[in-house]
Length: 275
Image (cartoon, rainbow, N blue to C red; front, side):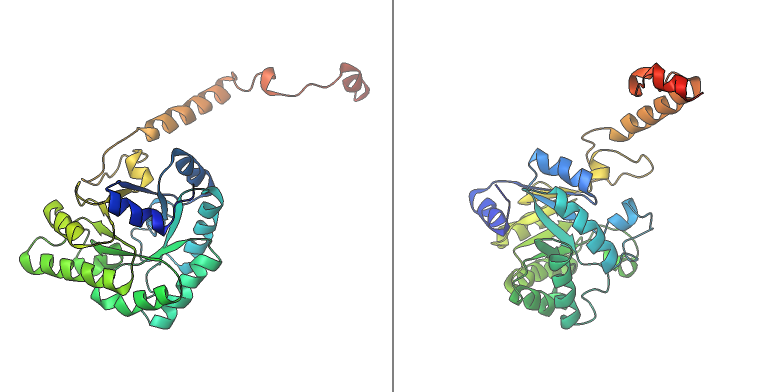
């Protein structure tokens, strides 16, 4: 059964926890989709984990459309959520609607996600009025990393915590069907989750959110150089890949691969005629 915005509403109502993982290409989207995850996020995190950028700020609309297309082809039942990249919606309401429409029409996404609270309320309203579902994103919003002075936990003092609650309520009122809460104290996330009638999806926001999202490379431990505190390792896929590649190199170099069983035969009579 295809997941939809209604799936998220129903989950909030009946207390079913929602699951979301990132994917950036067809193969991974197909694997994740087959496992039964509720939603696949084509995050602008692709800039860091797929394209090698130091942050998400260099990701373009063309990058997002390209990767969203691939994911949409592999996701049969998961809801495909596409991030709106930096400067695709901050410049004007018109740009926000136009670029959201491109992610749906050209990219094949079902939903767009954008970062921010009070400052993007008009953009959220306009996108929703264009019949495009919007997922909000509050807390540590990576596109604001330069304003935050780095990737830091948000909402730790009274003023910041109150603003996050207010922003969440405003984003809900503007028409968002769900909100990602990233890197905020879990007690604050619990308060926000209780106050909202739409589901919250946590990443580094504790167990009280209505669902969770992780970058799949983090969850599967594909890279060993950096691991966020909020990430649990569910499988050491990086080690498996490294071992497999090293074995391939060894076997090619020592001549044990390929053997004749991996090749194709031809009649000796034909071979004789070639000399």
